[in-house]
Length: 371
Image (cartoon, rainbow, N blue to C red; front, top):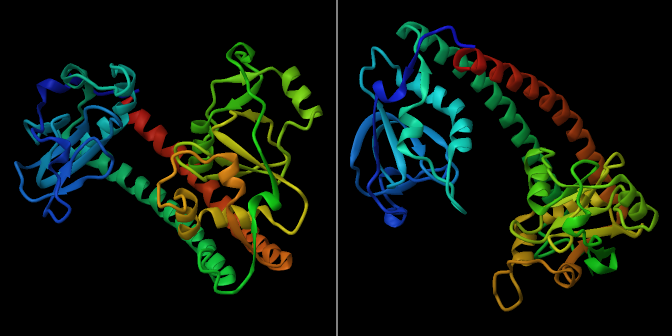
């Protein structure tokens, strides 16, 4: 816990909101335009020229630091230090980056959550001496730099695998190497789970994944789930062949289409029918790792997300999924690619292990300074 006096944020800062509508952006604009999105847009003019922290007032509720000319959406809070000898703005940014989880808990509203001005002005921020604030910023910046370096290493390894895929197999749309082409339903049994009704859900047991849970698992490696089915029901499904096996693939079919998860031997979960499709491996001429990376290529995603008429698809039905045509290179070549991926995964595992330790240490420092 912080050992310094805590001061009401409203006594140390000037807080205002932007004035513009979200559609005021300009693609070729010169200045940043801060909305509630994580990434700023562009705009041709500016209304503000200052060093500040920007807090998205609704939606994602993210926090940004900026120093210079910019403009802002009307639900974006612009927070300036009244006295920079009392409150160092980069220190304020780090505090609010930690406090944003509390803001999410305080947010109100229906579909789109939002915060009120009082949620910010009433926040209690620890205020050490100015030099100490600067030292804290330097320590956390250095720690964050190391974390970002590890993340960049992981991104480079992912890019290496994607490049190797194209090198070995070519563009899946043009198929320049002339591989055989087959429909997915001729390689996998395309199916779904058994429907789980609300009265069959329990407070603990076997995890029951919604499509949003699966997306987080695929993109962030986060096993977040608050729905369950009973162990007994899961075992009945398992005995009846209604549970995916290792090397089967789950595909997101609503929202973010076509994200893939390869079922692992240790997995024990069930999943939402209709929103998640199940490719059951038939043991013939296909390697699931190859299919996983095929789904991730830009050309294949374009094919998957648009009907032959050019209409954008918002839902990937079992029929549409099964009729997707994919290149089928000889199995030994697919296996060679899978072996390469396994080697890269070993390197990624070591980096991820180090990254996790760094993030634990970073969070401990944040708790020490701001908790």
